[in-house]
Length: 53
Image (cartoon, rainbow, N blue to C red; front, side, top):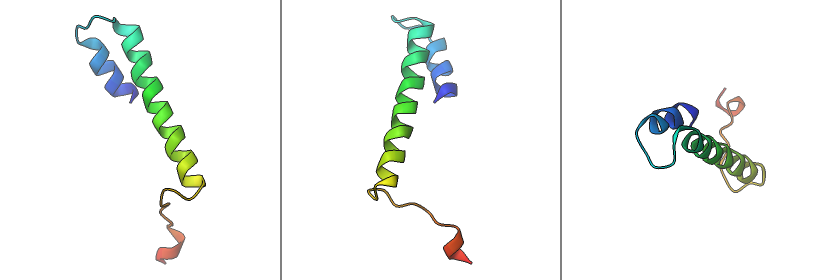
């Protein structure tokens, strides 16, 4: 999300570069934390490499 944030923030917008970059990084971090929480509590399937052998 950081690279995506830089690309989006580089385009002209009404918020400016830093607020847009911060928003994109914050949304990406929030999404990652929510996915991690859901996976740890069994709501998302977790891929297990050990079971493939």
